Image (cartoon, rainbow, N blue to C red; front, side, top):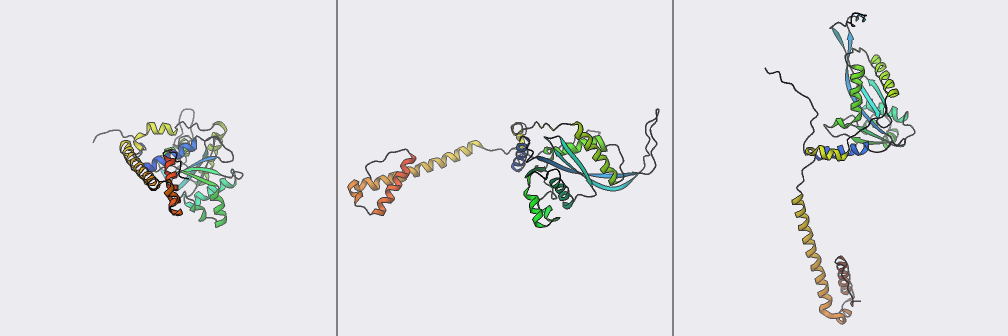
Length: 298
C-alpha cells in the first residue's frame, strides 16, 4: 500500500451562481467602515470532545516534562460559540452542552440585550446551518419579543462549502491552537473558564482583523466559481430583439404618417375626432423615439 500524502482543502464548487452571490455579499459587508450603531458581527460554532484524566498527571520538573497517562475517559461533548467583531478587535467564546436552535438563539439574544443593547441594527455573518434561522427565536420567546429581536438582525449567510469566508472560523482556529490543542478538559465548567480566559487575553492584546480579499480579487482569482456566460450569443440575441423592435417602431410611424398624409391636412380636420386623436398621439409618440419633428398636423 502506497504512503502518499493527502492534503485536505475546502474545494469550492464550479460555476455556482448561488455560491458567488453569497460570497460577494459577504465580501461587500467586510469593506464597510466601522459603524458602532450597526456593527458587523461574525459567529461560528464547533463541537468539542470533553476528556477526563484517569490518573493524576505528574507535574513537570527541572529535568522532566509533565507526564500524562495514555489512558483517558470520554466525558461527553460540548459546543463552543464564537462571536467576533472584526473591525473593533473584540471576540467572545462561550460554551454550551449542546447546539440546538434554542442554544443559538439564547446566545445571540444575550449579545443583543447586552453588548449591543444600544444598537438599532446588527449585521450577523454566519454559515447557513438549519439552526441559524429567524425562526429559532420564535421557538424560544413569545412572538412579540422574537419579532423585536429578529427586526434588529440583518443576516449575511456564507455560501455552502464557503465557511472560510467567515472570520469567526479563523478565530475558532486560533482558539483551538492556542487554548485547547493537546489538553484534556473533562467538564463544561472548566471549558468555559479556559475559553473565557483566552478571550480576555486576546482582546487585551490584539487589534482588529485586516481582511484583504475583495470582490475584485474574487472575480480574478476564483474564476472557476463564476458561471460561464456566452457573451457572443447574448449580444446576438439582444441585437435581434433590438432589430425587431426597430422594425416595429418604423412600421408604426409609417402607418401613422400614411393615415394622416393619405387624407391630407384638410381631410384630417374632418376625420372622426377619436380616430384623429389616436393617430396624432401615435405619430408624435413614435416620432419622439427617432427625434423627428412633426409639423402641420395641428
